Image (cartoon, rainbow, N blue to C red):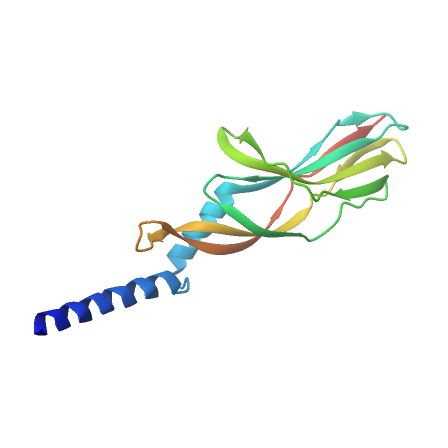
Length: 171
């Protein structure tokens, strides 16, 4: 009976330590740095123009693409600014139905979602640099720790990322 009682206490301590390991907050700065590094390597946002040179009476579209590596999940994103410029008439189109595609970026495999498109019509001739779009992203990133079933424990990381600037030449 005493052996059964000691076995139960050891089992209870083991279960409690596993539960504690799953729910403890990220306080270790090196763990936080690893998660931020994984985010920076695995989440990218890109602005892609349909054409970099257009005529004054033509229009072009800019697609905003979110690239996410296969081991990271995105739980939320929020645009911090809209594409605005005095040199173009801008129509921002937010997309609600996302089509997830697989694509290679910088020799790495990513999932890709076009989350917004902007249609621009120039008002004058010249070369214009359009500022990038800021995006606040919440990602679920696998930590270095595992749960009792051997699965990686996912940690939430919030970061603001920016698209590249787009250069448009209007002739």
